[in-house]
Image 1: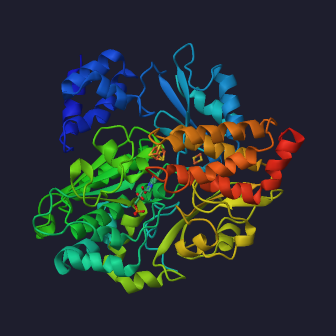
Image 2 (image 1 turned 90 degrees about the vertical axis):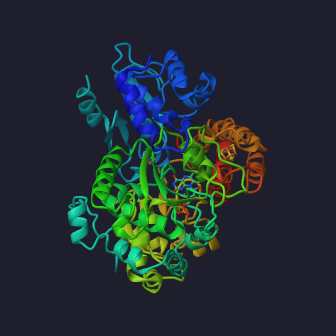
Image 3 (image 1 turned 30 degrees about the vertical axis):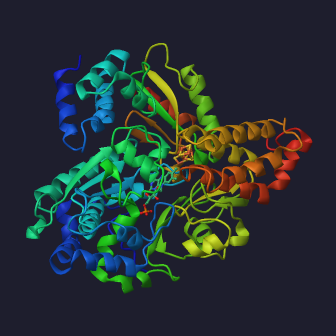
Length: 154
Length: 424
Ligand SMILES: Cc1cc2nc3c(=O)[nH]c(=O)nc-3n(C[C@H](O)[C@H](O)[C@H](O)COP(=O)(O)O)c2cc1C
Ligand code: SF4
Ligand code: FES
């Protein structure tokens, strides 16, 4: 069941578009913001609310990499693996994150604190290597700065 | 040297709010355009300015607008969409304009919409640009309150609704027809063309898609005229350009310079040349989907025509430097992995071909390359080239590969002959 908050936000977004179904991507993001990810029940609930079939909505949900159809940790790390970051040391950033968190790319730590995901270019290539944690961008990364910033997320 | 696009932007400057934007002359172009110019006159000024799209393909903006039906019976509403998806690897120029001067983008958007008589506008923004989203939301609200947006703008009778759409990922959303599908709440597969969006676009209505930097030029063209705009550049193509450099240079960054500034000046002077101990081997002049050039091309003016003559494309104008500490095969593998992952999967040459290309590069990089691999890669550069796919992702993906096979052939051959990567 969609909560009142979710319904209200979805309807506010829906007024922007030329068709009712067009709000579905915003709706999935809203649900995800409240719940961390989008489970099967929520796909059904959003689809029903927008007059779509659940399969149709799921085909959209699974297309976009920032809509999570599996549980995610409390904080999501998007580490840029594109070309400028690769040149400037993405490999060691990735290896360091993997060993510090004890997980592979695409996994979530056992305590549910972090999910580690590779990302396409984050548009900060002049400050490579970079990553985002939740909504915050971190640039010119090295092992020490990664330690410091991870510590601020609980 | 005039820098109209970034006059309000700098490391020590905060992005202007409405008041300070107005104090610096902001929204006078809009006042002037709406009160003194007809839509046709705005279109003509943009056409005469020679402005070419800054999103990568370089299509003349005035020509693009000229395909929008303008007769009274034209389908309505008409739409203008600002492409702020910026996901081309190595590209970070639109971020500067979005974060640094959101009102400039809004002013350009209203003027562009006026020119084609669009009544609805979307700014299509990638999710990761959080700061840009905040600043845009704030600026849009300010512009509505001041009457620069909404019904009957400044009493001109022209009205425009502007919405911010925040995306949910995937590079292919930046392709203009994929973007329209994303706006409609579908998978962002590109559309088969024709029909082109100017006649059948979002929700089947006439739609123009323009890049952020393209739109930011419009107020300045309206204020100062086409001739002034053409005079900003060093070559026949009009305007200034945001150029960027990333990689092992002394001062990676982004600068507004006259269009046609030479490649060498950008790399050596503005980016400060290579860092001590690193040698330049090659570079991509305009993002991931452009052909490699080398220091032999330092004299080439960075405009659309000249870079094309040199065998590449200006693309987004953001240069990626390959230095001698990293393996060229590894760099191309990184690029092709990106394109393979981001393929929308519609065309067989694209999704199938990019997987095979990636697998072949992986085996070469791992020292397991075989005789014939380079010919196989070359064959794919043709098979995935222009004309076989619904969009330019696959042909774009082949540009760094085909030029790497030319400039770094010896490196590819060493991998195969020595059965290992010389950089490992
Ligand atoms: C795969 C792909 C991705 C693209 N991504 C972007 C993008 O992120 N931003 C952009 O402005 N143009 C992008 N483009 C180009 C657009 O299709 C379109 O040409 C451009 O937005 C038009 O604006 P302009 O004429 O002002 O340059 C992309 C093209 C392709 C094929
Ligand atoms: S070329 Fe690739 S990305 Fe473009 S439509 Fe075809 S499959 Fe999709
Ligand atoms: S390549 Fe990493 S931010 Fe652009």
